[in-house]
Length: 382
Ligand SMILES: [Zn+2]
Image (cartoon, rainbow, N blue to C red; front, side, top):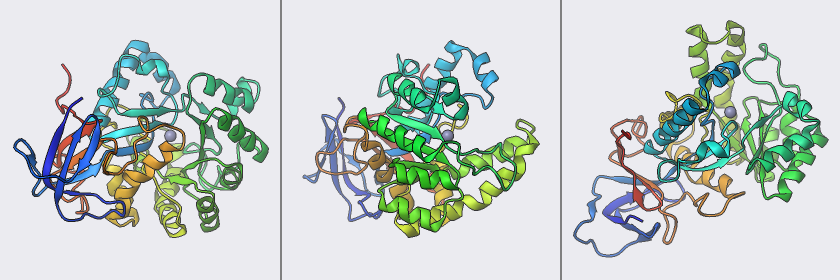
C-alpha cells in the first residue's frame, strides 16, 4: 500500500464546490484530512483534488462495433486490448467503472487492480434475441447472474439502428422487467435498463430497476417518477457524435444517420430534464474501442455543454456514479466518491480548476491518479 500527502490543496466537496485549501493524506488505502504539513508533502498550492472519476457505462471488451469483427479479433488479442483499454481508463482518472456488457470475468484475469480501475460487470447484454435464444428472459437473467453479473443489463428499446422517429417500442413486457428485477434482487444484483424512451422507461421505473441508460427521449414526468424511485440516469452524450463520425467515415451504415442525428439533438435535453426533476445523473461514456478508452473526461465537457453547471457535472462524474455502484457492491468495489476522513483513497489531482471550460479534459491537467492510496504510474507498460 502506498502513502502520501498533499498540503494546502483544494478538495471537491459534496456539493460540487471547493473550500479553502487544506492538507489531505492517504495511507493504508484511506484518506485522512487535516494535520500539520510535513516534509515530503506534495505542495498542493494551485492544485485541485477530486475523487476518482466513475464511468457508470462503458464496454471494456467491445473492441469492434461489429459482432463478426469482435470474433475475428480472437481471445488473446481481445485480452490485450481489454487490459490496455482499462489501463488507459485508469490513467485518465477513472478509478471505478461499470461495464454495460461484453466484459466476462475471465477477461479480467491477469489484470488486477491497480493495473485497472475497480470494475462491476453486467457480463452480457440481454436483448430480445438473447432472451429468446436462452428460452426466455428469466433464463437469460439467470445465466448472466451465474456468469458473475453484478448488474443485469436489459436492452429494452432499439438504439442507433432504428429508423428516425421510431425505435421506442418496448422490447420486454412490464411483467418481464419486473421479474428480472426480482430475480436480480435475490442475488443482490441491480438492473440497468437501456431505454431510449417510451414505455420501456415507465416499465423500468415500475419494476424497480436502478438506472436508465441513455434515456434520450425521457419525458419530464418519467424523470420525476424515476427520481421518486431513487433511480439514476446515465446519459451517454458523446458516443452518438462519435457514431455519427463513424457513419460519415463509411465505417457504419448511412441508414443509421437520421436516428443518430435525432439522438445528438435530443440527448442534452434529457440531461436537463433529469437535473430539473432531481433525478441523479451519473457520467457514462459507452466507450468500447481502445482508441476511445482514456478519453472519458470529454464526456464531462459534454455534460457541461448540455447545460449542467460544472459543479453538477463534477458530481455526475464522481459521487453520483459511486452511489449507483454502491447499490450492489461493498466499499472496496464501490468507494463513496467523496474525499472524506477514513474514505477509500481514490482521487485525481489536477493542476487546473476543473470547473474552468476544458480544464478537466485538458491532457496536461492530471498531476496524479490515486487508486486505493497508490499513485498510478502514468507511463504505458512495456
Ligand atoms: Zn452501452
